[in-house]
Image (cartoon, rainbow over all chains, first blue to last red; front, side, top):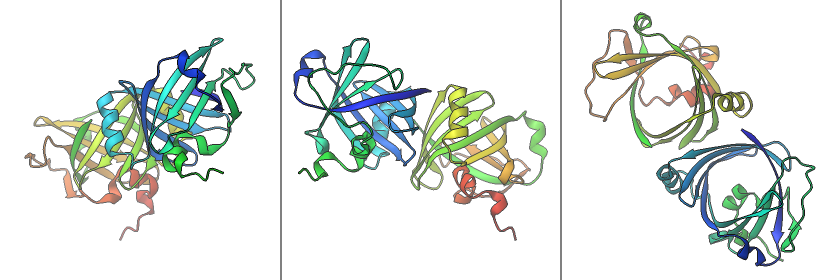
Amino acid sequence: MSLEIERKFLVKNNDYRSLALPLIYRQGYLAILPEREVRVRLAGEKGYLSVKARVDETTRHEFEYAIPPEDAIFMLDNLCNGYRVEKLRYRIPDHGLIWEVDEYSGDNSGLVVAEIELPDSAYPFSKPEWIGEEITGDDRYLNAALALNPYNNWQHG
Amino acid sequence: MSLEIERKFLVKNNDYRSLALPLIYRQGYLAILPEREVRVRLAGEKGYLSVKARVDETTRHEFEYAIPPEDAIFMLDNLCNGYRVEKLRYRIPDHGLIWEVDEYSGDNSGLVVAEIELPDSAYPFSKPEWIGEEITGDDRYLNAALALNPYNNWQHG
């Protein structure tokens, strides 16, 4: 078990693309409840089953277990009721931390989000020039929320 | 992933008790949906996370993964909304198959259920003399159902 402390931002331009090679992520949800979620993920060729439980706006309990990729594929295809998200993930090292930039596809295409995981909520970090508006705590950008209500369904004004 | 084909019975007497030493099982539910469940279990000193999805009355897809017991304990104590079941489980070998007899405690005390897992739904098996009425397909006896609506809440007539 780990505590996951994250800050999340929109992305202003594509300059992050030259900083890492992305992996294809497919993930879906076996359960989406207000207080927790159970997620299955295929990250490149690896499968994972995760339980995440909300603590507060920036913090969640996270349990993640490696599972056979064929199990992940079966669950994604059969047990997620279509609550799925697909994206390319770029993992970009930065001063000992890692920016994860997600380029969504499918019903969330056009959305690009950057996250940084922090050792504690007061930990200092610097923002690369391609980092835009902060969206930490905006539940619409949770992957589980994007599976239920994709970006392309939002009212863009 | 495996297909789980099970038959389930009530138990007529305590003669099974001399046939095996039981383990203490604590299990709870991270999600209970009509079509599937996500279960965390502590079996003796071992932890498991499972996904079960209904195929038909006797058959379910089952995915089970070993997890650290401390993770299982945290999830049981904090992430199951009180949807828990406790029981003693006796595993009794019988002609190459295994009877699992569950003596429930807590809000399900008084209930004893025996299950046998079969290689296929037509596989022949014999019933020990302590096996009673068949309850396969009676959803009230699913562990997830017993977590939501315990045996001691039923109208016994």
